[in-house]
Amino acid sequence: MTQIPIIDLERWWGSEADRASVGRAVDAAAREFGFFQIVGHRLPQAHIDAMVAVSSEFFALPTDVKMQCTPSDPSVNRGYAARGTEALSYSIGIDAPPDLFEAFNIGEDAVDYSDPFYAAQQNSVFAPNIWPDAPADFRSALVAYFESAHRLALTLTEVFAIALGLPEGWFSPFVDRSTTTMRTIRYERQSGESDPLPGQQRMGAHTDYGIVTVLYAEPVAGLQIVGPDDDWIDVIPADDALVVNLGDLTAQWTNDTWRSTVHRVVPPPSGSGAAVRRSAAFFLDGNWDAVVECLPTCRSASNPARYASVTAGDHLIAKLMGPRLLRPSDAVDTSGDRGR
Figure (cartoon, rainbow, N blue to C red):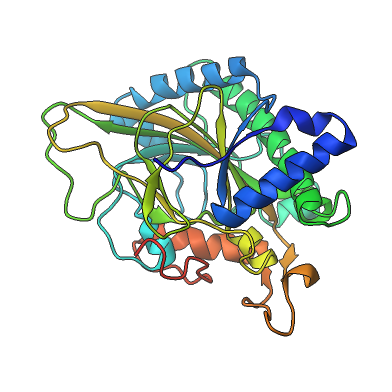
């Protein structure tokens, strides 16, 4: 089985030579796979454990209770998303049956709406979180994990600047007030459940939309990515590792020098019985008003910019709405023919 690279991020907090070594490792992984694993990431295990525990408690609640946390508008990326209400493959223009996952989405939990920047998007990407009454510690556990994952994602953008030969802190003006979302996700096949429809996945083939994704996932089969040879390869996290992948905006910045890789979550084999898979994805999608255009170091006369400049917020909303309205997204597609 092809193994995506495992990078020890602890070296990032070491010497200048260590930082450069981490940057080179990230650059190599970003070019070849668009995915890598990180250990030494400093995301506390206690935050992971608490997030997984309370998420499991929430998803075990009756469906009608969970549905009380459904947002009133599908453009609001908050609250509960029931199984079968999204088909992520529509984000890259692929028609497929609804996906077999349920999720709970949060963003920043303490937003300063007196700031016009946030107030302008109070009903959209900076909407208030939707919290259930139970479990009692659901909010505190998810917010603690969210904040730790956010710090990690910002650290990764610092690594990206070094890896791309940019000045230290180059990405900061694009992410200092970023749209951020975390999805805790549960995939469950119950005993006696019928097989999926033809082409139906636990999560359909898609690329991520923003800058970088930090993923916690249980070390079980399911996640697959399109590898360098355009075949699907399995990704099972190593012990204590988190999975990192790049999003569309990073691919557009780098003119596809770094890959925004198509990935999916496949159902367990037919006849294998009941199965559960749990994960949590944190998305750093950039400041709402950030303009993303090809880096000068990633284009030339023989390799001109492949994408027009785009505002991060417009790209995000266009990507989100396709899977939720079960129609192709209007946003630029960075996937090419991969995953089709």
